[in-house]
Length: 166
Image (cartoon, rainbow, N blue to C red):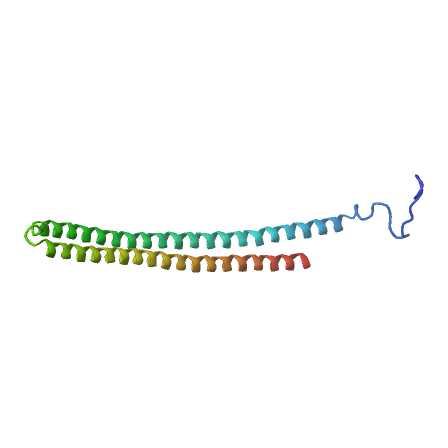
């Protein structure tokens, strides 16, 4: 341990406070630091701008897919409603035949019931397929967005390395 008040030795060409009092060197260091700070802000502003653009494109694609899915589901719902209405009208007309020929009426009712059940399952299958297609398209959009964001930040990191390597 050094004693208090002990002198430290300096190289003979270095004066006390010489680095701090050299105005040219101070200005140069300040200019370099300010330049790097500006470049850093620019790099990250560009990266953030690309990030926001990618997310906006993903949001737009998601909204578009949502509208497309809604339209498909609505169309199948309207078709199902039309079929149900036609079935109800058909049942009204054949209901009067039940007392005359109960066996034929029962057979027709059973056949109609099976057909309508099959129609409902086809409708549900179509809706499930529409939802699956939408999910696949959204997954593709999300993957593309993720790759775009990753590329943006990779570029930003590379530029930052270049800025601070110089």
